[in-house]
Length: 60
Image (cartoon, rainbow, N blue to C red; front, side, top):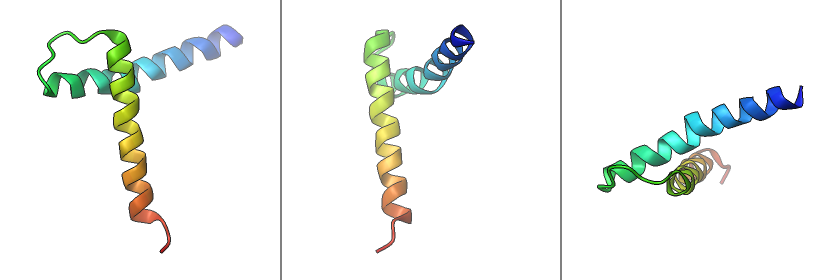
């Protein structure tokens, strides 16, 4: 069961965070970004999206 959860988390991180980071870095001209750079760029991108959504829906 632990291996299933670990593999599921790996797939989700690869699909959503790292792939998003690769796309962001390609927008800035990097053709083949490293996985670690893609991971951090993806986390930064999704953090920015979360902050923007929070700013829109937060009660004033």
